[in-house]
Length: 154
Ligand code: RB5
Image (tube, rainbow, N blue to C red):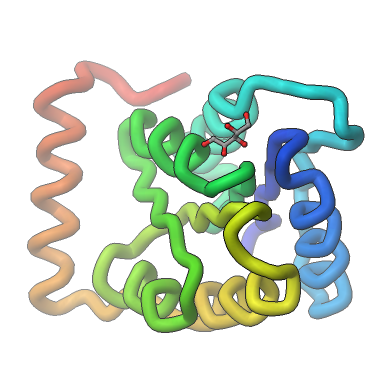
């Protein structure tokens, strides 16, 4: 697996820090896009930087955290080719991989505790896309991307 991209705004500073430590302890290589302090930033700026790196193929998985996980998810999904899923439970995290082939996981520090977030991250990283009939559906998502966006991010 390539390096895992991880980013957060200031509302998820502690959650992102804990997840980076957790991933490194488990032996994953991590590219930490910040934030590195509680200085406020606009979550779309972080989400765009990380999602564009995913779209360029620099990461096959990335994790984005904000207060709710919603702003990161909405923004990342604007980048063609990126499928971001907000998951605050293990079943959704597994399905986000198996059914949706989501390369980006988003979570909210104001919604879940750190220990549950670690379990969700593990479940998501350990699950693979199932293909089969799901492949046709994901291909339809990509077709929508192609219809509305002339060229991928560069
Ligand atoms: C703070 O800007 C908060 O709105 C943000 O972290 C996130 O929850 C947005 O979706």
